[in-house]
Every structure is written in C-alpha cells, then in structure tokens.
Image (cartoon, rainbow over the protein chains, first blue to last red):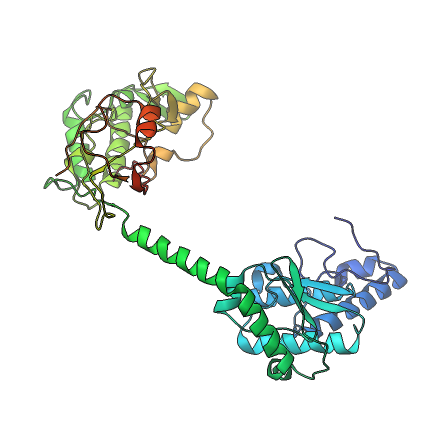
Length: 386
Length: 40
C-alpha cells in the first residue's frame, strides 16, 4: 500500500492497513522525528480528526482498530475516508444500511449539508441494485440530488435546497421519485417475492432424513471399565485395534517399541479416546466402536417426503458418495486407509513414520466427533414404494 | 426426485448417466440432502 506523505494536500486517513485512524505520531516516535516532521504529522492528524468529528467520531482516538468499532461506526469511518479525499461524486451502495435510524438521519443530514455547502457542483449517487430491498425498506435516504440507478437508467428528483433529510422526505419531488421507482420496480419485486415463496415451499417439501434408527440400550463404557478390560486382555485383541497393539509409544528419546507398562499406557490412552467418543451418551450399536476398520451395519435411513407434488408416481434417488470408491489398500501401521485416502491415526506413529521425530501437537483422532469417514459397504438395493 | 414415471418404468442396473437420461423430462420436483459421516 502506498504510504501517504506528510506534505500531501489530501491526507489519507488510513495510511496503514490495520489502523482506523493512523497518522498521529506516537510519543516515542515523535521524539525521534525532527520537529518539522512531527508538526506536519500532528497537523495531518488534526485534519483527519476534523473529518472524524464530522461523522460523529471525534472522540475516538487513533488507537481504535476496526474490530473495536461497531458496524455503524465502521460505516462512518468509511464515509470519512471517502470525504477526506474531497470527491466530486459519491457512489454509495446502501450507505447507511447498518446504521440505526437516528444515526441514519444524522448522516443523511451530513451528506445533505456537504452537498449544499461544499459540493455544490457535485452529486451524491445512491446506487442500489436490488429492487426488493428498496421495496422492503423504503427508507428513502436520498440526499438532496440523489440519483438512483435501476434497469440501466438513472432516476433523480429535481434539485431542491432542503435543510434536513426530513424535509427532503416531505418534498413532493421525493414522493414523485419514490412512486416512479416503485412503479418501475414493482413487477420485478413481485417476481422476486413469488420466487422466495417457491423456495419456502420447496423447503417444506424437503425430505426429512431420519437417522434415529433402532437404538441399542448400550451405556457408554467408562474409561475405568475399558482400562480394566484392556488390562485383562494380554494383547488387547478383543477390543483394541491392531494398529494400537503395535507397541509404539513415545518415550524420552522419541519413539520406541514397548511392552508391559508402556503398552498398558497406550491402552489407557485408547480407553480415554473411546470414553470421549461415547461420553455419557446412549449410543447406537452401529455407531459403537466395534472396530477401527468400521465393520458397521448397513443402516437404511428412512426418507420421508411430505406433500409430494401432484402427479407423483414414484421417487428417484441419486446418491453420490465421493468417498465410495473401493479401498485400494488395507491399513498399515499408524495410518488408516480408506477408499484410497490416507488419514492420520495417531501423532506418535505418524510422526515416527514421516519425520522421524516427535513434533508435538494433538491428533485429529483425539478430537471428539472426529474420525475417518466410514461409509458403509456399497450394496445395490431396490425399494418398491407403496 | 419426485417423478411421474411408474415405479417399474426404469430398469434396474442403470448407471448414473443412464438414470439421469431416463429421468429427463419426468422429474416433477427435486431436492437434495448432504449427509456427513461422523462418530459419536
């Protein structure tokens, strides 16, 4: 971004991208600068502050960042950034949208004042593309000679000197413009309204996907239960996946094969994982952690379509499963392979395999509700509708 | 997709392109669902 110089006649309010009101010299920096430079910078800041005061932000300091401002305040800052460049024409798209009614009134008066006082040769254009928006919110924040672009042409009321925006709204020319625009946009607005009604109807017809299915009365296994269960199994083959029985663990020197205590620690980690996955909830059998190989059941969720369109004799269902390709490789140690895509299993093993050293961090597998995608085995079924 | 075809109008064993071709002009209304796999 081009930095504005102190000697420019038209200072830019935002010379730095992150600051709202930069330019005021910091105290430490001003000590380092020459006196004339500091004076120019202070003069520049005072000029900007005048524009900020015009938009009602005079009390704000240069330390305000964009995230510290409300939506309306940001709009006003944007307006000050535009006005400070002394434009002849302002093209505004919903200029006072996020502002409240009072501030909108004040900003409208400000624009009217600028137009009538300083910008007599200029014009304020309010380019609104959406006719529906105009119909729903006929705020009419036209300022003096405001132009309105719609359907490829400009509509503007005759120029009239008004003191406030309220007087503008009471003006007959404004009413004539309002009526003219509404007459021109009415058909499009009603067409858009009808389309939105159709969308609502389509939403009502959306089939409801019910994934409830048969529930098994299985309580979530507690961590202590799993730990005890895993201790009972010497190699943990009954409930522990094969990749977890590999015996890799993270030690002080990196990763090493372990047995005994280390393996039990790994198993305890697994129990913790499974405790997170099933924490306190009644789980379905097909969702139970039976195996990391995802030998789940083929559950067919019922699909309901209420209020089908007239003349419906059948339903067609197209399914697209981007992951539903045949697996190309069984899972190796430390990784889960599914449908030809590789997913990280555990950081300790993954890091061992890939970078030869432990780099820290957590595994996606440890996050709740995260696991590898588990599409069920594809099987063509034919359902005859009633 | 809600169609005006008889349930037996479309033969079994069509692939995706063939099914779309067979349904062309017979779809009264269509909707879509996106399902994601997750694990509790």
